[in-house]
Amino acid sequence: MLLVSWNVAGLKPVLQRIHMDYGNAANYSAAATSSTGRPNRSTSDTTTVENISSLQKTINKKCNSGNNTSATPIDPFAKYLALHGDITILCLQEHKIPHGQLSSRSEPHRCSSVPGYESFWSCNNSTVPGKSGSTKSRGFNGVVTYAKVGTVQRSSCTPFNDPSLDNQGRCIVTDHGKWVLFNVYVPCGFSREKMRFLRALRKAMQMERDGKNDKGGKRSVVLVGDLNLKHCVEDVYWKNLLVDVDRILGEVASAKAKDTGCEEHNNFCDGVGS
Image (cartoon, rainbow, N blue to C red; front, side):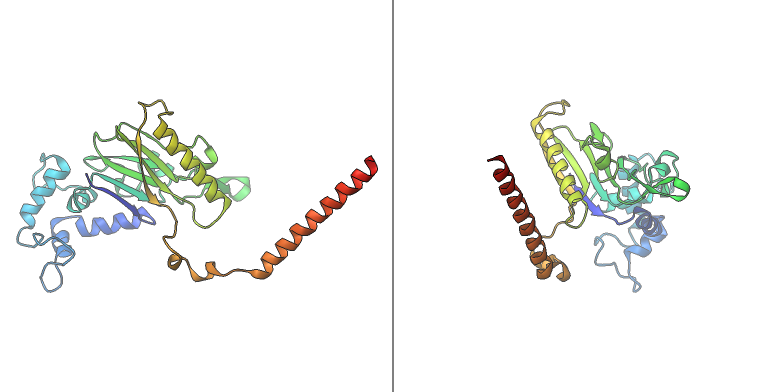
């Protein structure tokens, strides 16, 4: 099994490039070779112009169960997945596709229907004020998990049971039998909202481990996605490493003054009571 996680930062332009490079045998042949006619180092040694016909038949077999001929067009996205290790599960973050496009089947390149795969989506349904008092969807975030047909038993785009978190399109859960997969896009920065999300995520994962979701008992948990975390101090943007001493001293002084005021108030109340 091959599981891949990828923050695409917008699925539409990624799909456009995939369709350009893998849309037909001619385009794929051009993508597989350099301007000198030699195979690109980034592609397999067997990926050459001479064997593109046989490779096309192999792709057809992987993507369409061998029912199509080499002359029958196949889905470029399915071809891409087949040629990159025959991916079993693909977890994407920041797809940025509104729920309305999925429900109306107007999503780019019909990316919700990839031959050989099922797709499970979580979209950003939170709203912001619009004109004349109306509201509109933010259209950001969004996670999607593509899994080969028959590998998913259930899914949930509301694992937190909290609309304020679930509607942000930051988590999709898929159940694969003995284990459960969390595909997440964690808020960035150091905000309280991020910590609230992480606490809810920890709780949801623990419920799966403990079997408290009543969906078949205890399960192992796999977490993938964009966690927006830094591995070490060198990965932190240098301005975020600066310490504002004056601000900290001001906050300390303010806290001390507040504590002093409370203490004087308590002493006064004690004197009145006596």
